[in-house]
Image (cartoon, rainbow, N blue to C red; front, side):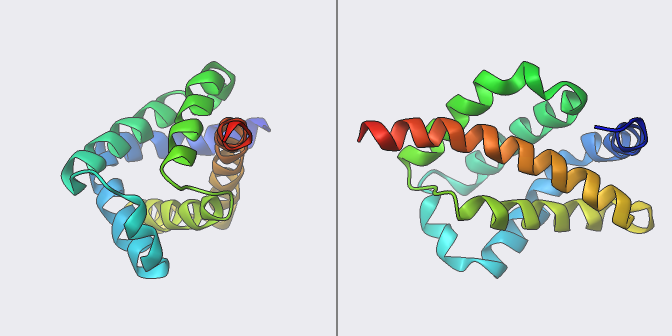
Length: 140
């Protein structure tokens, strides 16, 4: 990732991290609006699910400039998601819902360049998670 991208991401993380719970709420609202069928993938208590997602988002935000550190935990997360029915076609939908939530929080600080930067981050996270999910699906 280019230095300019990393700088933009770091600046946005300073705003996003303290607002991870808000991002989570906006994310789920958007996800269930654009893909209502995904609601059936969430079997646990919605509030507990939101807390787990918020914590995972915070970990990604804190480590976004060194995602290689998260490779194995993200693969394991992808394995768990695959076991409950998440498939590769869900990842772009989730990415877009997350980008929407982030744009809402950042407001006028959300630029096309920052959107591209974060899209790249989420695509990388998705690829890593899908590699864990693929491994689980092959074993079935």
